[in-house]
Amino acid sequence: MFRYLKYSATPTAALLSTLTAWLIALTPVACQTATPVVPPSAPAPALTPTATPATATPRAELQEHRSWTFATTAPAVTFDNQFPCARVNRCEEVAPHDYRITITPENDPINPSPWYAFRVRADAPTDITVRFVIATKTARPRPRLSTDGTHWTRATDTQWTGASGAPECVLRIHAEPAATWVASNDIIGNDRLAAWSDALAVRTGATVETFGTSAGGRALRMFTLSANANTPEDWVIVIGRQHPPEVSGSVGLMAFMDEITSDSARARAFRGAFRVALVPVVNPDGVHEGQWRSTLGGVDSNRDWGAFTQPETVALRDAILAIRSRPGARIWLALDFHGTNKDILYTPLADDRTFPPRFASQWVAAIQARFPDYEVESTSAHNATEWTFKRWAYETLGAPGITYELGSSTPHAQIQRIVTGAADEAMRLLMEAKMANAHTPPDA
Ligand SMILES: [Zn+2]
Image (cartoon, rainbow, N blue to C red; front, side):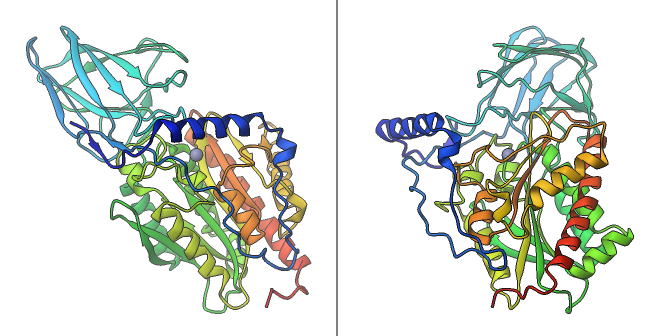
């Protein structure tokens, strides 16, 4: 029934992994500080691969794509997971028009960020009950509903019963002959992000490059924005969707790039001064398969920036290093969009040692000043010892590596409003930093 991509985890390896995680958890954050030496005018030397190779190769379990039709009680009701981003692992009838769906992750242990998406239809309109069994201890994302797979509303309090940690959550909906989509967040998958980024390329003249191929054979695409051939080799890197369910991060990434490519005076000036490399989807297989966290290889790509075990992280690392090796090139910002339970920025550990120095703290302050009625949260301590993209960007490139998290329940209009302003502030600060460093030659 299930296909296992890799299945080599051993009890010993799992125990080692657990012990390691436990020891890291007990280590005070202050002791975890990495100490790269990053001269302000030069990128840091290439990272020595000190990361311990993974002690266990996690298992990645693909769901079976199928439909389930229950016809013992008329009208018949059909569920299916046969579309991109779908995820349902099991479906059964427990009583007339009363069903249980089971949602499990692609591997275990895993970050508790469940993703599910399925369609349901009935031969004739009828009320049904759907019981969710979600294989985590806590997170119980409230379903979003759609009749076209594009426009979504959150299930109401009368439709949804479920709270953090509930063993079973219940959705009551009216099923119709036309499909209803049910998902843990709006579905913004590879197709929609490709359409958005292709339109951006047409509008701006950005070039599109396939810099690698995912384990599942999908193209990894980078969009490069530069006003013309004479645009200085001053770069901003923007990436997203390392983690498949983090739709709110994609909403933020699109808002950020839409402002960078807007017709505002600031954006036009910025595009004359900086180049932007955009990778909207780092983990297209995980997005397509509706995975909770991992690549198709069963690895969290945002913990793979030291060991580099995955084709996706290797290809992106090499593409960024190729940018850095261009004559006169300098990377001023490396921004990675994610989604979590709230809006928060994860900033570099040693903000004063990045180039440009103190960009992250200045940016956080600028966003706060721009939106006084909105609390901007940030921390440099989060996951400081993990091999995240932001850590790699800081240690290897000397750049401000920043993880920009947007809340999975933050209304998309709110994400767009804040991130649009944040993009404008980032452009202002980067141009000011460039003026201040006008006499500092790039590293030879
Ligand atoms: Zn994430």
